[in-house]
Length: 146
Image (cartoon, rainbow, N blue to C red):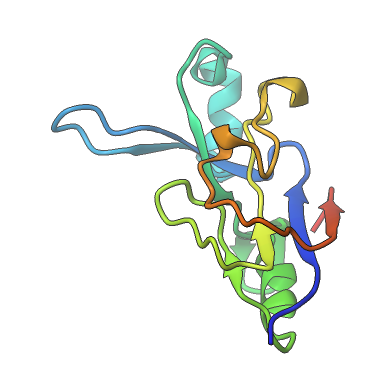
């Protein structure tokens, strides 16, 4: 028997991995994952995160370490592991190409460059998730800082 609740995990601003989708023979390219090059690159090329650049959210960022034991940019792997360890959890990583319609915990990366009003609402047809006739109660776990 599965959980009776549906939990969405929302990262803070900059906490989603953004990629330029594959076009033709050109494969998808990660544009933002909060790495050192991404952060420094914003100073040199701020236009690469311009809102007119077609990017899609594909996951939550992972921690970046400068030296062993010294985390400079905290990611979401600890929260993900803690949720995954709970009994009965079926997780959806939020990648648009690998959705899990049976999930009861959904990592919900979003394009932080855009207004929240521009993002598809979880459960809407534009979210491309398989719809269930009876949805469990919804809980959102908003995680601004990992």
